[in-house]
Length: 458
Image 1 (cartoon, rainbow, N blue to C red):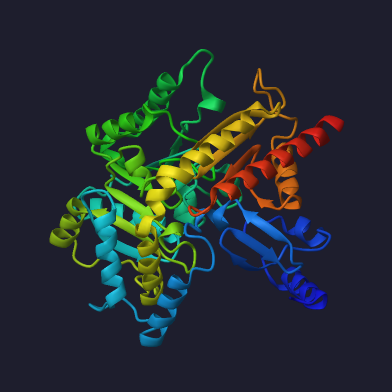
Image 2 (image 1 turned 180 degrees about the horizontal axis):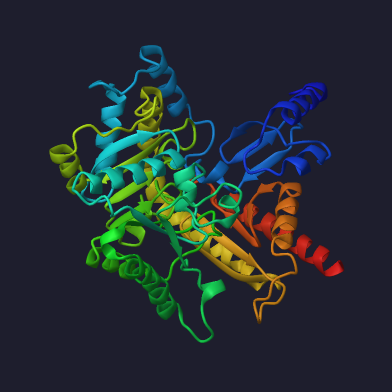
């Protein structure tokens, strides 16, 4: 076990030398005790340097599908590193794991998505999407068709183009974002945006038609693509009404706008099926993959591209001037193949039939709590909306206080759950056993109650 002195040394090194992502640096510097340092993990449990155990209700960052400590992935990485740790995919060159993974992804993803372009993160691959789609239109003599439509509260990554695709003002202000050519429409967030007496079906159609209104405003001849996650993750686990995606799909086809589905969170079994596109019967032209592709063991992402687009690239495009040093990295591709073998060996199937339904049943039992306005979810994804008053859905004065207080209570109570504003989000590993699901929900409920009592007292 790590000594207290070594643990303290790491915390001081973190404060002095490490810029943590998405962190308030002033607050982090003042934080008593410094960062929590996670030292090891097994199954669905994390252990910090003080020896405290945490149930990982967030799969790291939505990505640890098969749980921690799988020797099959570790062995695959070691074997590949011994044979060929790295080589690039530039200059008419590739490696065996790269092409094997591309073929496997073509087999797994929806019909027609037969080509893969690899990167190292969802952000990188969503940048690739922007360049790929604009290049596709450019070589067809349609350079004006370059505008992208995303959604408010949508998240597609942190690079300049990916953050522009996303609809978070906090990621735009101070960065001169979004870049020119990126636009946003309302999300399918019925809890917060439905009108009085508007049912789910009607709201879903209204949210979808906001996409069409923006296409018409910009001119369909100028719009390249619409991009969205099947279920919006970092926006607060927004599950679309059943009417939403069929109407969005119809609108995109009618106006010759490419449909891009960001499966970075929803892919590889997270929604109870292999991809969120299957869950919602979406036929994308382009699909972005990351996170669960390797269960987070090593960085890897991919863009799956339709044969129709690839035919234009091959016949009219010449060289596509884009790529990364680590595109198709053989070691990460070997890890992905090992991870997919595990998922194919009953994990996705059992999750969809047993674990996900049980998780949804249990998390919805939190809806009776006086501070819970709504529980929503699909597969191994859930969002618990926290409110001051259930009747009128009013918020606490500061729209993140309830969430941050609950998140901190979760840590004290031995569970990792993420606060997105005042929505508590959960995404446990697909292999979480039923008794651990019970324990996660029990601890989340306890944490919500502690935050509620604290807010009432203040």
